Image 1 (cartoon, rainbow, N blue to C red):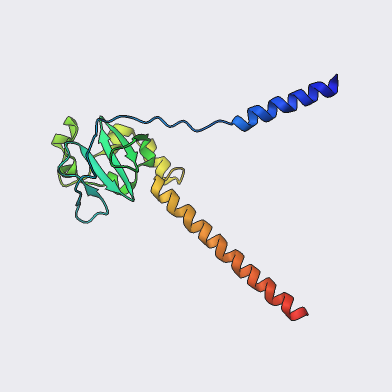
Image 2 (spheres, rainbow, N blue to C red):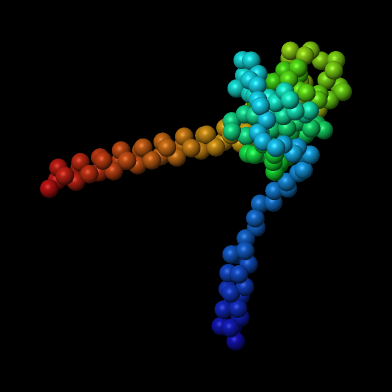
Length: 174
C-alpha cells in the first residue's frame, strides 16, 4: 500500500513538475496598425531613431521598437507589435535621454519643460526606479542580452585555452 502511494505521489509530482509555470506576457493593443515599417529619422547625437510621420511617441533602438503612451513605455521586436509594457527600470537609458521635442504627442505636463532637454522622469516614477537601475538590480533588456552574450563568449574562450593547455601538457608526458 505504501509503495502504491509513493509511486502515485511521484507520478503526480512528475506531471505537475513537467507542466511548470510559464512566464506570462500580456500583449497590449496600442492601436498602431502600420502597412509597413515606418520611415525613421535619427535623433542627432543619439543612437535613437524616431518616426516623424507617426502621430505618437514611436522610437527605434537596439533592434526593438518603443512607444511611450499614457505615461507608460511599451516595447516590441516588430513595428506593429505585439507590445509589452516595460517597468521604468528596464527602459534603455538612451531612450530616457531623448529631448522632449522628438515626442510627437508629449503629455500635457511636458509642455512647460525645455524642448531640447529630456523629460523629467523622476517626478513621475519616483527616485526608487533610478536607484534600482544604478544599483545594478535592473538593466535594459538590450544591454542584458549584450552582457550575457559577452559573458558566454568569454567563457568559451577560456574553455578553449584550458583545453589547449591540457592538450600540450598531455603531449609532453608521452
